[in-house]
Image (cartoon, rainbow, N blue to C red; front, side, top):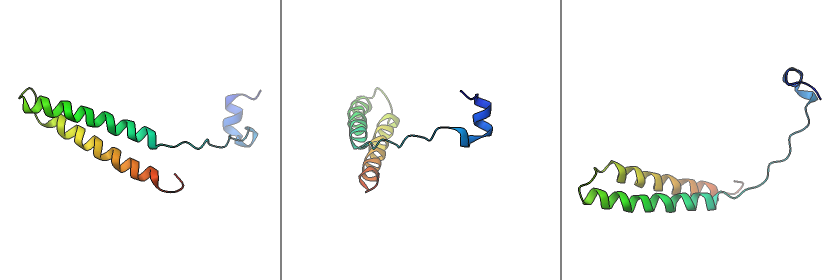
Length: 79
């Protein structure tokens, strides 16, 4: 078996990389959006009761919006 240094200096001696496995990212984005929305509800309740400021609600809202953007990106063909 060749050493790491030999493989680093001569990449042609390496085995070819396996083909990537196609994976759907849509379920990951959907779960992430759901988690951000639950956190948004909690943050809104805490903000409206005066326990915390609006920063948590804004963070959760932006997280959910970025998740929607990621979901739209993942729906494009070839992704």
